[in-house]
Length: 217
Length: 230
Image (cartoon, rainbow over all chains, first blue to last red; front, side, top):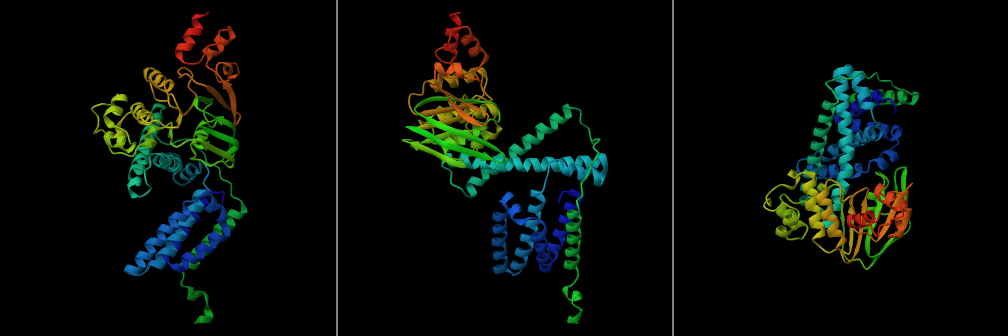
């Protein structure tokens, strides 16, 4: 989806639908298979697989301890897949466009810019983490919980320092609040089709299945 | 002891780097613009980044070490003493060498970037590695520290040392110069003959060559000696 308004809206709606019930998660998964180019999403965001493995692990524990693990697993996996679809479709500047469109040139611009900075910071953190792991490997540090603590500490420290430096630079350049940005959106027909399909999937998820099958009554 | 690159190609998205050549014992200087692929070459040589095609072969190398441009990536210890121990070096002598004696309990991430760089370089240089790769070792250091580092590196008697930098003023005595241009690693040969083909040569070196006073090497003392011949 090229139009961030439709992508963000569809993502919010589909996530809610997937979270609401297993049926919802299944229909949202079908939508994801049809409209998100699944192979491309997984190839671009390889973190999806370890994230799903983690969810499966917690689901298994939940199933053993109190039940509901399977439902948790299915719903969370689909939400992760939707998140990955949103993330892989991201193009620089589109959250600023969305923010301005939603909340105007002052508050909206600020929110959009913060979202952009957050995403850029996330990308830098991923590349930093890869270097940290390489450095740890050279030092002979074994991978595990003990190696995650210093890595996390460096990542947080780095992110805070970058945020501080960016804030200072913006203040020096005279930034106070808001901007004069006028967003322009492109909405191809296939985006509209995918958006309508997401809406339908959401409706199916929230309405009891039996309502659709009149003969069942 | 050598590292050979045969038809190596590293790919990152739309960008790629081609490399061919052999890094034998001695000090190698790899220069290139920012973003030319020096860090990628460093990772290829260290074996941390697999090439998309071609081979990187190491012969006779038992221990290899790389110092990254950003020293914070190396930090694993909560304080300077434990950080040194994590490198397997003696904290007392290394902290003294890095000018950080008496700060054993300080958090490494509370140091300035320059101090942390000094610490990491001191830890890296405290052990005798067969293959030592230094990615931008002079960044964040002041002139005094750069010269001190050059003296230490010039004194390395064995092993392969590869320095990847866009530094233009401070160099140790090097044996061979390489350049990365247009996505390709180019071997400029041994010194001093390499100086005539070195496109990224500092202005002073180019000026000396233009005047017919070719320096024997690129350390400050060699450049001064050549300048005195004018």
